[in-house]
Length: 201
Image (cartoon, rainbow, N blue to C red):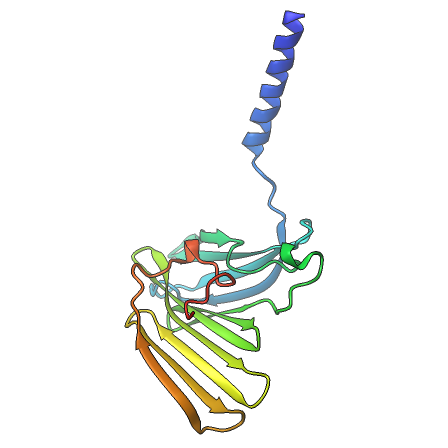
């Protein structure tokens, strides 16, 4: 009986070791979006991908950032499922996400994410500095469902926030507010959850 017990323990140990050596299977195999551009200002095109996992019932989306080097294959710098909300979030209880998959652009060395919000859209802008992607700018435009639109902008480097309310279809400014609030250190993309915190409220 004792020998049988030790044999069983050894078998379990071998199975666990084999599973750990193989590592978890990555089911993010469907490419949704791809963008190329120079993110770290070295003159070489980098790549941003959005990949989908169609096996998981929530259909999560993974953002992947590849940084290129001269005469070398692009290196995966960052990958996360925290940036983009799943297609079927748990809180929706089987219903699809209300918003479209965000778009990513590389412009002037910045990584920009354009996403839908309730009644409008938002832009998050990151720059690559000191080995990290840091959030430096955020904006959100909203419509009140009636006659006014509001544009809120936050420059995280200077700390200045502005909020401008206008009549729908009009350039006339109804209200304008300006305030200053510094966030230090700047939020890094590694711990960023745009659908949980908008950096305005």
